[in-house]
Length: 140
Image (cartoon, rainbow, N blue to C red; front, side, top):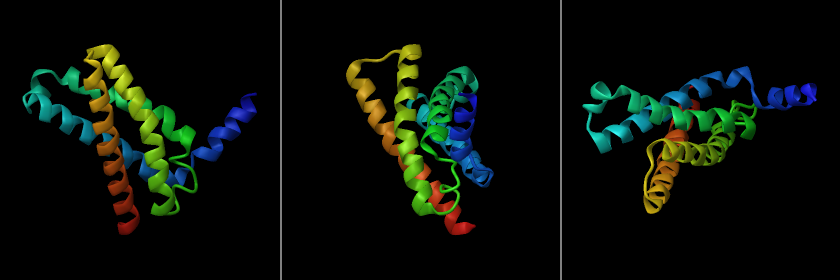
């Protein structure tokens, strides 16, 4: 069983995709931090950095679970924007749902607010990841 798990991850994690992984995490952290400051003001960065860290963290938990499973860092993802962008978006959608779910458990919100929050973060995250990955392949 361990060897089948090992081969599963081996197919989905390629060292050539490391720059994508670093960029993805930075882009997601920046977008989420931007969203937090838009809703709470920039003062929250100094007054409650834990709130910011938890908010970023819950989304990164989802990302770290789904990006390898979907193949966002597979050999194919490291080859072209045409492969890398859809893999990132397909990874982000379930990762976002996990992030919103965890955030809701920790912070709580109304049901309509959860749906709107999830839709906004799916769109913004998908755009951010797509633009970042497109730029990476354009500039390298």
